Length: 263
Ligand SMILES: NC(=O)c1ccc[n+]([C@@H]2O[C@H](COP(=O)([O-])OP(=O)(O)OC[C@H]3O[C@@H](n4cnc5c(N)ncnc54)[C@H](OP(=O)(O)O)[C@@H]3O)[C@@H](O)[C@H]2O)c1
Image (cartoon, rainbow, N blue to C red; front, side, top):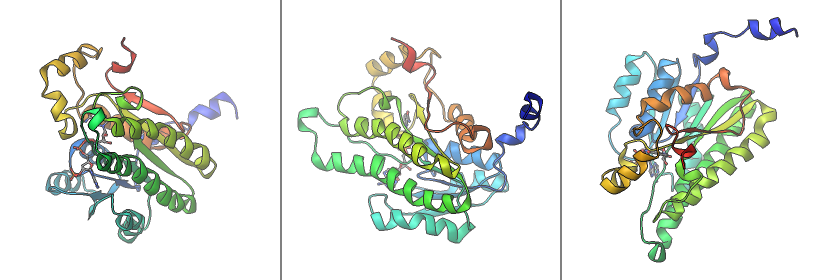
């Protein structure tokens, strides 16, 4: 192909998710709500495995875009529930084009007292469930001829914060898992990439954002000069879910206002 032929096809339609079906875990609250609304605005229908809390807000927002949203309640620690997610999505929509492994939990405790059950819970939700759900969904995507898997890492995919060794280990593991999926699945036209958010106000980090010393320390390292918002992540999610990112595989994108590049 000539250079002209290679570039002529490109249009903003590359970013469209029209006709796509996306699974986003835990998207009835927190950052997942942003991905859900962004995908709906880009044209996708949604399947939301969720744990607890209300589903009303995100349902209203997605339906206002003229898109469908189906919820499926359960605990990602329950392997039977976890493994049933792809079949339930197929029952509702007959296809799965996009998976966002968004749900995560944390356990904070002094390192020398760190509880074994806290380690198990965090590793199981934040890493094992990501592997198992991604693996199960990939089998569907292979049959369909392609798909997009987006894993959610963190600033703690690269550094260690105090009192949360399981979260740090799981989020470091997300980078390896993302590369492994990309390596194994690229030949099936499946791209697997990670979004690594910096510091965004949500329930998961309320304890640290409410601590004035920690808050000042972190904010001082963010070159944007502020913590992030849900809206700051939505464009990257659509990009990674869309045709526009078809040649990106195994990458981790830091959406952190510059946090990770400041000494
Ligand atoms: N906020 C940040 O600054 C930040 C920064 C970097 C990365 N992240 C990552 O972004 C993602 C979303 O975090 P968030 O800030 O939006 O936190 P969040 O509001 O606490 O959302 C986490 C979601 O995971 C679900 N979840 C937790 N344990 C579960 C379980 N056992 N089974 C099923 N679902 C479970 C939660 O449901 P329940 O609450 O009902 O249990 C909730 O829907 C996570 O992967 C997090 O690590 C966040």
